Image (cartoon, rainbow, N blue to C red; front, side):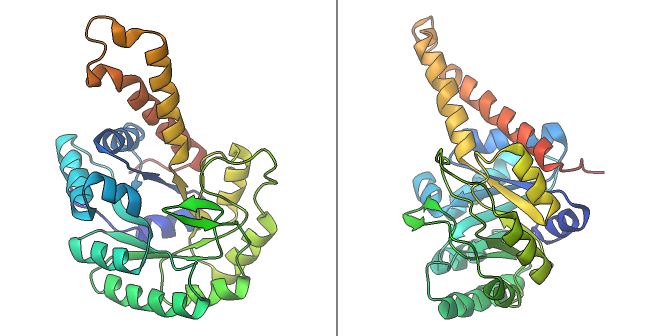
Length: 287
């Protein structure tokens, strides 16, 4: 089964008030767990990779080939999008060239005029090959591949202007952040989300989906969020399960040190997070 772009699935999600889970992969185990969660729930999924994770794994093409090979090996039948997460201009162009089915060009840290022009160029290159494009307006808080955002609210007029470039999905800052949410976080700004949704009338992305309470995610989806990004939650779940395994002394019993056994609890934890969040997003099963 080949990759699909994100256009049809996010448009349907937008029209029917559900969201597609977009889960970041970090290695082979992550890839298999995300695919298993999607297959177990019989739901479409977006597998995405950041620039940093791609560098760690060996490059954009290797990541794409790994995901494709695992899809074949695991007999995956649900639709899968191969997406670049938070790519700069060069990364977006490279992923378009090697065959990703979707790319995010993140130009939020550039002057808006430059973000706009580069987004237009990426849209032209991507759409010529049937590849969907996500762009970002307003900074998402926290840190992503060395880019630190304070989490300001996206400007509605800028959102409208960026949406008019022909992008397929728009990421807009509404108080969300990457990484763990601090105790003093005040929550998502639903008033700004509603303003943006009514202004652009297109699928929106919630970055920093890890750690946002379920009720806020459900409300955000009702207001136009059609793609929810999850990464930190899987990392924390994996770390906690692996820590528990080692602290129990299981790695000292027999061949408990075997990586296949050592990593098993963490892998199960990732699958559990993926399937749980798919339920939160109300992603319908494939017919």
